[in-house]
Image 1 (cartoon, rainbow, N blue to C red):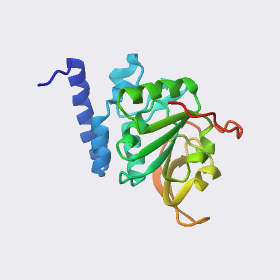
Image 2: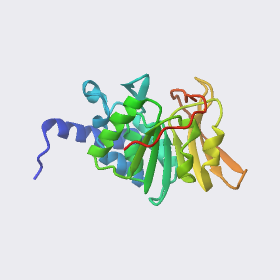
Image 3: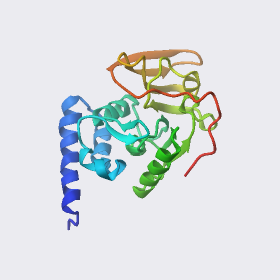
Length: 227
């Protein structure tokens, strides 16, 4: 028996349409990614006044100059990580927590870093409310990664810089994939870096994107993890 409210039913229909039109319709083929995004209630990761925009085909502001990425970009980056379900994944840019929730359905363990403490707290609460207990979050400088938990099978970076942070490259395991936007504003490309050896990497260009900048807070060590 279905006990969903009319609002929940409306969101569920919008979510199905998003998967059909924005994701499948734009070439996303990984069925695990599509299933994860069909399950995660994107509206819960937005401020209450903006939840009606949850399934728009574009980014939505979440405060602190940050956005929740366009659904297609979330799916594209998740698909590019080539996850099978057993991996430990690092995410740089927790933001609203939505991408971390999607990754939690695709990997064994997710470690996610956010430089804005208030966003990190809100995201952690939302993830906990949805039972995403395989996501660990912290506030800190994402460009430094999470060295004490490295190496990672996959790293996803939801902010752009002019070059790939060296610490993130070094925290990839051999065979691991790093997916991130790189380049100056207006000239960003989504790259997939695969670590082939100790100092050997293969780079693939996945197309044009537009992301907020990756801010390096000066090389300080991140604080202790949060729940």
